[in-house]
Image 1 (spheres, rainbow over the protein chains, first blue to last red):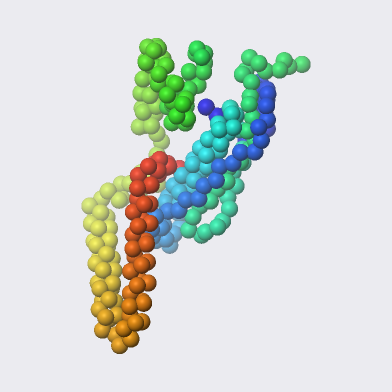
Image 2 (cartoon, chains in turn orange, brown; image 1 turned 30 degrees about the vertical axis):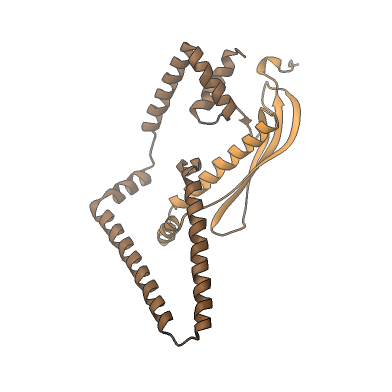
Length: 114
Length: 144
């Protein structure tokens, strides 16, 4: 299991090795039918569930790819995780998840506190 | 590796479908050996399913689902979709008929037909490949 955290450190867990930058990038689009439904719904405003779903799919897939890359590099955690969107196409949701892959010691191996 | 805490962590990952293939294999193999762990997994899965079934639904979600399940709404959607499909097919047919009857020179007609047919064949092949990939796309089940 790869621990993901937006913080730079985990309480009571010591970083024993910093591996470096890992990323997870995804671009997904909605299908034609959902896009048509979304267009019609936007006439009256409110949440557009079709797009919400696409954004959620992108988020989960990008984080999974981030985990996969960290795992491939022998990490057990990714610190300072950030999500950022880019725009290549108006019909697709693009997301880059990135962070620093590290190896954390177990809780018992944590450095003693002062 | 016989660390009970490690297997408990793996169990959390297993329930959330977050394990890599080798971790998943290791955990499943361990469950076959360790009856207590297998029992705990069964209990945790039961709780996870129960929690999913009683998950809070936003009022707008519930209302939307109620609306789209209604007979009138379903009929309207199906009639609308059928009319759009029929209209598109008719327009396509009429366009082909017009194209065949037009006074355009034969070589122009052939070139145009080649472009259109080529596009349709290419798009068809691309869409067929996409459909196969989508069957394996586990992210389509993500709600939000």
